[in-house]
Image 1 (tube, rainbow, N blue to C red):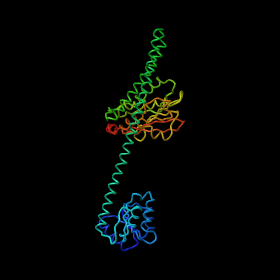
Image 2 (cartoon, rainbow, N blue to C red):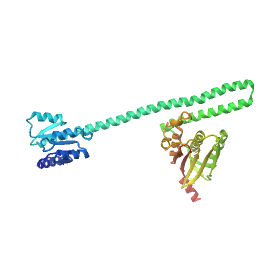
Image 3 (tube, rainbow, N blue to C red):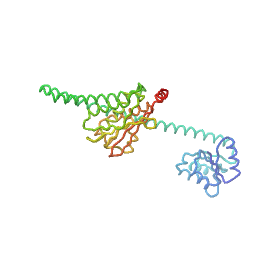
Image 4 (tube, rainbow, N blue to C red):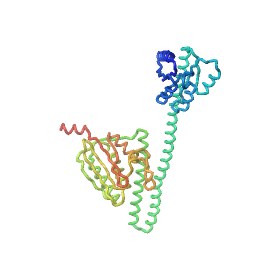
Length: 378
């Protein structure tokens, strides 16, 4: 938009008519004071400013505008009949004017100058937008590089931990073999097996994240018994973690359409996290039911919980809660993979939690319309 500032109504009318005829949007002010009020409220690309006005003259208006951050980049063209006065012209440029046009105004010259300023403005705006986009891209890539380095560091540490444990237990096993201590051998073999399983899960997560990034995470969907799968998981998890009481609530008597192995992966992740972040000896509640043509599954613990801020971010890739990262192992990708799996089943995943009172992770899966159709027809 262009602002014309002139105390002469005739000048305003003639300039406005010519500019609007050439498709420019125009606003007007009949005094310096009125112009300043408008500049505070609106943004202008160009101000055509009469020098000789009663009250505030054009130079005073220009100097006042230079103090407004909103109008610092606005171009100013001065209009004056006193073109012979070099002092006036010099003052005009020093007060912020970019050009000078003498009265009576040659409309062709005025239009040429206005179009030039508009072209410069459009180019400057495009350049600024490019700079902002480039800055954002650079910041994203810096940030991405930082996350990558952090992830490599965490992954290296997390992989070394079970490997170090396995090496230590094998050395102890060698000593136990020499003593023929079968009970100790059995105990240490069990510990080795647990560490190998941890290592296997870490490697599986790394492979899954790679497949997700490359779009190659495959799903083999078919009908399976959700309840049978869940019972099998609970049995294994209870045997591996006898210190925790796993309580199952509800029962699904119907089959589910999905990738059984991937759904099992999500359930194991939920239970593993509940055991990890819940206090020893406490219960873990596992619930499953049908709600509004959806399967609702949840795992609730009574452990450390998390704040609302962490609840919004916990499914992000590589996200780890800083306060617990030193106490609990993990790559920060397990829940991200779970979200990808549930999303690919057209489901919903989420968490409800209160700091200090535990967390409840859940997912909803839609019942298959194909299965419902088969039931109706039969």
